[in-house]
Image 1 (cartoon, rainbow, N blue to C red):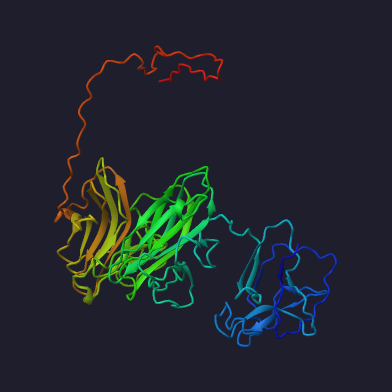
Image 2 (cartoon, rainbow, N blue to C red):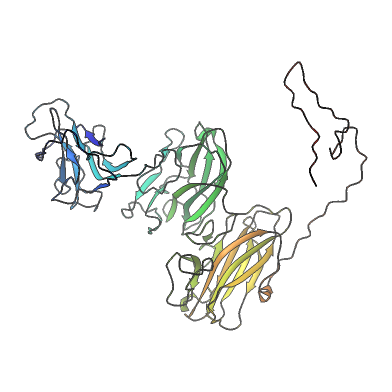
Length: 543
């Protein structure tokens, strides 16, 4: 078994083919072969690949991007992203004057037929009859990702996701970590250098729809994805996530609708998906809002991931790899909470370890003190939570306070419709704290309306200090405030939950039966002339 790169080249200035020794008629399979080639090594221009020979055969030639064979060939390569790099292009032989079809083939060594392999490469093309160009070819001994896998970090393009062609008027654009090619992009970071985005200079109401691949859900799954939705003037753009099944955006079932301005950071949203006998097919629909043209504004999507099992309970997060569904809202505060990921230990005042694993392999969120941040407020906000219709909930978390006289940490409940705030928990040390240990906190809360939980820090004076939070959990049932000194300034009161009136005793009806002793007046038919009948039996538990 071999893998071929096959292409029909256009007329171009040819490059002479290398001399190739004939292949053995009975080559031995190469076991566990891994082939990687970025075509940058001049002494091995095509690495372990081989040119095919024969009549009407062209050649794959190594090209210096600074001297492309034609104007249709790229002037920079994919590896180093400038004109000093190299790629291979399909060309005619120097002595080939024919005008007929010519095929250029590049072969791998013989592979083991008993192994699975994955071939990946980057292809450049322009127009209807592109000159074939290949860069960064790789063959690995593992299966390629399934074509119906919904997970995508956009590092190699759109992962098979496709654009709507009829029912929208703008496209999602792939950002390939090659600098700010558009003014309406989130700031690049190591975690978000590849993603897709919408150009927010489009008129209000413009829509862009991106479809995922199909997926069959045979068990519950959790869908998570990260979005960047922000405008300096406040925005009302909308993101809709729909299940379109076997149809299109017009047939979609709305699963999630978001209009929040999430500030200048990425936030993670999540959805619980139930199993279904029908194909599952997602659509991400972005709709442009007001105040997005002419000011810095963003609308981006990244890290779509589908995993078996239910999602974490809303607002709960260990911060070991990201902020979960929490986000730092700089529009309602003066400063931003920062994320410290695995290995990012502090040599100053931040915690030396997270509260989850008690080592530097976990993560947490924090704000470090600064003389210029005195009295600055920072809000870390949860996703919107549904009304609580029964018993209270309990918010628990671990906090770390160090130094910075006058620093305050509070847990608040926010009504996004009215803007009202309720203080659930508040710690205001009267003197600096120099004990760098993690401390446990708890607070009860309840709301009959859609609400959000906020972790608020207000920085004190001086530059020595920090505030850090980790392992937020929203649990069922109420609790008492811990530590007790965090009760100062709390204006939350436990609501009176109505109790149902005792049920009036009603005599059993003719057909009422608990089946504790027998079948009462019910009977089980042994058969029927119309259909098969299930035989019900009186079953008693051994109690």
